[in-house]
Image 1 (cartoon, one colour):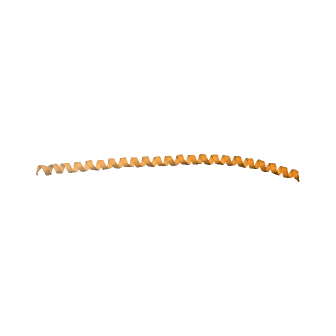
Image 2 (image 1 turned 120 degrees about the horizontal axis):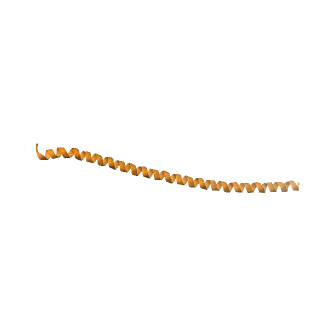
Image 3 (image 1 turned 90 degrees about the horizontal axis):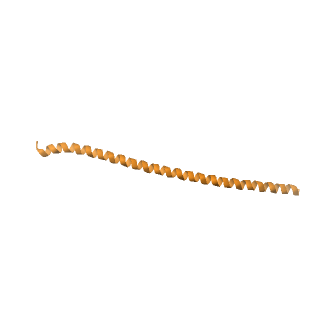
Length: 85
């Protein structure tokens, strides 16, 4: 057997093992990057939802105060109308 065939027979399986290991490592790195991007997207969505909920609560409190004021004014108007009768 010639020397080049012998080296080729040894080097090709080793090169294949190295290439497969490199591809698996690269795939694991890409999965980790994708998972990190996905986690960041969920975190941003959660922050936006929390901000929207806080804004909704603030507006609801404002509307409640306005409604209370309207109720007191209506009570005053009803009292005045009863006195007029």
